[in-house]
Length: 232
Image 1 (cartoon, one colour):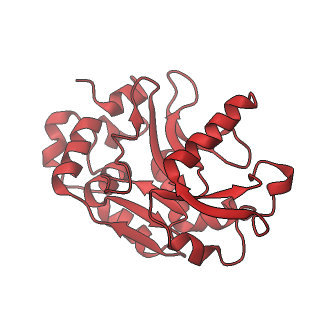
Image 2 (spheres, helix red, strand yellow):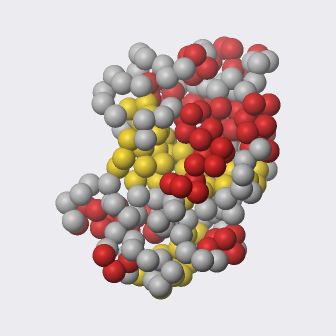
């Protein structure tokens, strides 16, 4: 079976850590986890590490064809995922009952890996912008209903997130008291706002109607709306 990392990057790898053959997966000693854990510990906002299941984590690594030398591999092996900034951003790891693992959230046919989602139904995916190119992180936002290439590889993107980039990235999509509202949700829940954030009337989320909904339904709603408006 073709490893997902191979399907994603084709013949060009985004970093040496993603080139490791399957035979070396069990013998990795220079894990990126200490570096990643230090970044988590020094984040300027709360980051919750979700518990991992060892069997599921090892299965994810094997299927992906990656090792813990990479940040994606280290996160997958040592966490079920991350809840970042009061749970506003949910980063996929080896998965939990309420958060998908990176394998379940991947599509080898389109060479994409869904690596995270936010509470408003925005998505982060790791994919090549063009065939044969190195994969970069792309964001689909509920305020613009389109994909934006952020130009970062996985480790650079996650490093920026843990260094505090979410505060500025989401500055126009937050409202007073959002921290308590968001932290009360499960990772499989999001906040539906009406009027929607892509509309002129929905720009101020402090005055919008807000209610918890299943995150899968919220993500699907945004993508369906984008297709209906011809922006997908």
